[in-house]
Image (tube, rainbow, N blue to C red):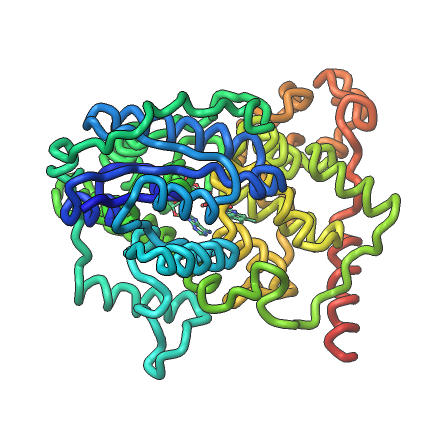
Length: 481
Ligand SMILES: Cc1cc2nc3c(=O)[nH]c(=O)nc-3n(C[C@H](O)[C@H](O)[C@H](O)COP(=O)(O)OP(=O)(O)OC[C@H]3O[C@@H](n4cnc5c(N)ncnc54)[C@H](O)[C@@H]3O)c2cc1C
């Protein structure tokens, strides 16, 4: 029997359910990846993400070639290419792992329909999450909207089933490579219409495993405190690997729990706090799968202040935010980190999102789009879920009256300004007591720091206290309408 494995956001060999099943059931296995041309042309994702994906694909192609099963690739409309490849290569079965984004669900439905019409069997698998949306439900079978309830049920399910991890399929090397033309070199980023760049986080399955081993050996034990400090390497930085499936979530959770089981200098709170974040990831995946309308707008219609009207003021505030030129150092450091590296620390993501929505009163969907175009880990479920959390429109959202004060956040989590200095070099010589609010420097202090406010670094583009008051007043007005 001949099986085709359609790789998508699962670019690895270990614990890869579709690949494992194909290797168990077929004599010949053909791995295939399709560059989704309409998606690439939409530029919904940016160069950081595309370069990371290409790095992961390069490593996948070389691992598959080492096993004597070369990766085939196509470029164009995915359904058309999958159906054509299955027909040209006379595949009996096509295997893939499920994806929960609304566009992907529709794509897969069409592919399944057309393959069935050709007489080709389709087998799909759970992979991207430990538990799919319908596996973790309320007592009455409803999707859960509160994270705390979801988390409790998620753990009950984990203890009841303890999902297993599959090794690289031992049968893979014994598969006959189908007699197909030799696969061409993968396209470059420029050939796909994107700027080439060296990804800031190393792509590929091997680096994901290396990073996971490093993280679960030591940093995980201080994670509960260090995850909030943007200046240090305190979180796993595995998000792009989860996004592209170079790391399996089951493997990550088992590895974290093993770190606990080993004993010695371990921190239960560190390990469990880290697993909580992976459960947040699953929570947002189930929100998207159960309520696909969130991808297009608010989960619920709540009385939130209206966003600023479009126009020159809106555009100039939005540009200042995008470029890291707001005059709020922690916001600017975060946005510049994103623009330079394709990644931003989670605490700072929350601060910049709150600032855009509540201080600048710019609609959260503009921020969501900008993040999608710049993040290495750009993921519809996590990005949308978190933006809706910050905008107070989501399932389990931040209270509307809670507004981050950027200077206080910065004093608390970047006390001596090390993170700010790294990404906002014009503030490098500003003393720690002024780094969070450099516009408060006297003329003498500015001269000593080599930084003139309004010339070398912007004055605050809005007054936080006034903007906060305006947001709350507008919020009250909306609520009484
Ligand atoms: C406005 C905003 C937008 C975001 N957009 C994305 C996005 O597009 N893609 C993305 O993967 N994450 C997103 N996040 C969540 C979070 O910021 C990143 O997952 C995290 O910073 C990645 O760093 P890490 O791998 O070191 O995480 P760690 O702290 O090591 O956490 C481990 C893993 O848990 C998951 N995770 C952690 N925090 C969250 C969270 N709040 N929500 C969902 N999953 C989480 C990630 O997969 C992460 O790799 C966003 C957060 C905010 C506030």
